[in-house]
Length: 396
Ligand SMILES: C[S@@+](CC[C@H](N)C(=O)[O-])C[C@H]1O[C@@H](n2cnc3c(N)ncnc32)[C@H](O)[C@@H]1O
Image 1: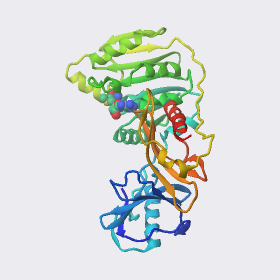
Image 2: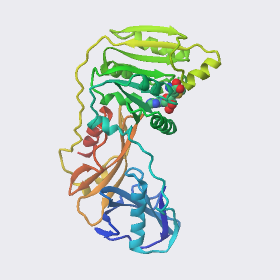
Image 3: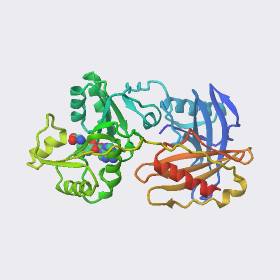
Image 4: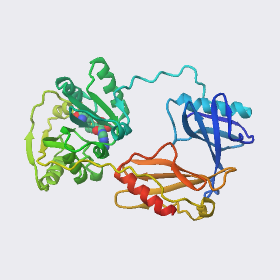
């Protein structure tokens, strides 16, 4: 993480600018855990049209400035330039720095790597969609994409090296009908329109025998899969794990409607890396295919992250609970509170919220008693919306 350590000096005055970087305000930790650590400050900056925070705190007898993890922006040179400008404007003795921005590696071409927000706001296609969950080496996904050029494929994966490998292969093989997303497949379907998907492949998911709650398949996942599947579209599990097979067939045979087909040791045109491994070990391979027999209602995404009230922050700050609030399918945890220096009724609320499997960290900024999410609202998953409504209850 880029940071600079320097001898203690007064903080920069805000608002001010240096080398094209704007320093907008300073927020001071409200310090309800002050017995544990020294005072922490957040410095709001804008560089190359991007707004983010820097953290400044004591480090032994010195001070350290670093990027704030929650509001990090890309490319990292934007953050490093802001750190360098901060230090240039107060001119202290620098003890350590790793913010040299020369010789930065160019970002690899990521035309087909999409952020989840792309699927919330922009994604549209007239083509049939097919989705592969946890594509790993990408062998099956890319084979399908090459052989079905009229289909728009979406590959979901959470393992970054696998994603980079697939993007490289796509470039080498000139494959243009795949979009790759680094996102948890259990939550992704929430943003896909109903009745649009022809196939969902789940090949050799991690069996999680000891932690079944972490499995991809659950009642919620199956219901969301059925919603996005077209009439006669299929959800296709391929696994070497007898336990996973049994677990899934039980879930699927409890559905009110649909057709289930089971195969053992069926050959496919392409064998994935994991499939090769299990075959070598002489294991059975099970296929369970669910065919959708329903047409579902259109998707409506709730996006309301507004706050319909103001706050007297100075009066309320000491009473805001920092205890985690945990409900069945979401949680909210206020991690820290900050007051903005020299500004009345203004501050930052640092929080973690949403789904347990994919929590989001955000700041809410309060200026003159009015709330806003810093750097934009969270992704509108149903858990984030529920967490937001709980947050409103806490702050009201
Ligand atoms: C056992 S590997 C199988 C990979 C590939 N399908 C194959 O057959 O070779 C499981 C893959 O699923 C990915 N994965 C695990 N949980 C996931 C999730 N919640 N969302 C998306 N991918 C996930 C893992 O990173 C891993 O690459």
